[in-house]
Amino acid sequence: MKDPQIDLRDYEYTLPEDRIAKFPLEKRDHSRLLHYKKGKIEHLHFYDLPDLLESNTLLVYNNTKVIPARLIFQRETGARIEIFLLQPIAPTRVIPEIMLATHPVIWEVMVGNAKKWKDEEVLTGKIQIENQEIILEARWINREDKKVEFSWNSDNIPFVDLVEACGEVPLPPYLNRKPIQEDKSRYQTVYSEKEGAVAAPTAGLHFTPEIFEKIREKGIQEAQVTLHVSAGTFQPIKVENVTEHPMHSEQIHISKETIEQLLQNTGKTVAVGTTSVRTLESLYWYGVKLLESNDQEFKVEKLYPYLERQSLPSKQKALQAILHLMEESGKDQLMGSTEIFIFPGYQFKMIEGLITNFHQPGSTLVLLIASILGENWKKVYSEALENDYRFLSYGDSSLLWL
Image 1 (cartoon, helix red, strand yellow):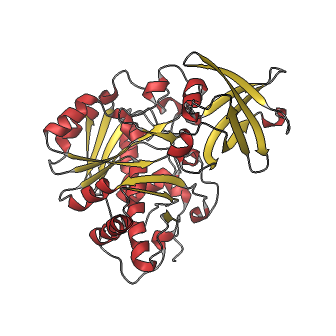
Image 2: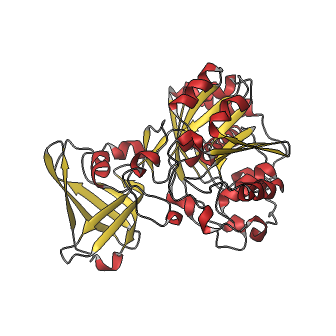
Image 3: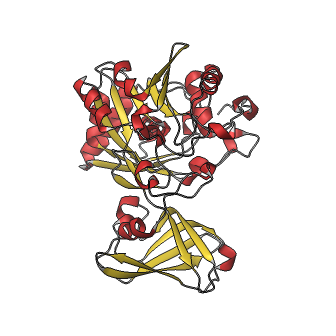
């Protein structure tokens, strides 16, 4: 693999604190929309989106649903212990399955005020669910590995109900505020479905039923993928060589129907959000993996796309390899994981356009945007700043074309 020469300072910009959107707009689709195509920029609103897409476009959404991943416990001394769910460990690592578990579960977590929580101490909390008083307990399984077991006194209440009843919305740290009641619905896309994300796929926050009605009237096609966004999405790059930045593995779920839609699509594919891009590009590389080595494990390492190869298969051939595997094994669903790291020099295989918000300076997501726009990413971000766009998770949107 050729070592890319990337100076992170080239992907920094000054983001004033007052440009960070701390709260969502009253109407989702009234956010502004910066439209970039072939070097030209238009300033529109999100409700203009359907007019910018051709009728044979395929829009791909990430239907993950944010769970209230911050669980707050109170010690008998009064100390507040905050447990942030990161990823499941047992009895299964499959997020949809562990959310439905009705017996003890083990998660890898981050713990706020961990020094106050003793090794043998059991934290307890009382929750009212369906006229039942549920006692939820948390205990250390392995402090060093940050593993905590949760158990509760009911075998008919799934873990997801407990989290929904007592958890707090895991707002991004840069919002620097406590969640309010409005965040429960607004830090969630209107099409969210599969519980398991600890951060929202924020590009989708602008969509409304009215937007979907216009999209469908125009004949624009839709497909869904699931990537459960991890807390790693907020992790800043702290290494000089960006390729050494640890990319957290994120779980992917794809239906056979979505693979077929991607194969049948004759128009442009537009990803809604960077998580959808990461999912789609990971799909391509999984197809390559099947063709190169017949390794059937759906796992895409962060630098797998950058290995030197004499040639690469087409998108159709890669997807056909996945479809063939699913048909041979009788599977309608595919589950895998990805660490894919998209930075300048990456050649996109699956998309022609991206709908996305504006991201933090020097972040992995700005590197992804620069992969699409080249040096023009600076022009786009400068225009957004000069025209008073709102930035980050609750901020405005953009439609960018390769």
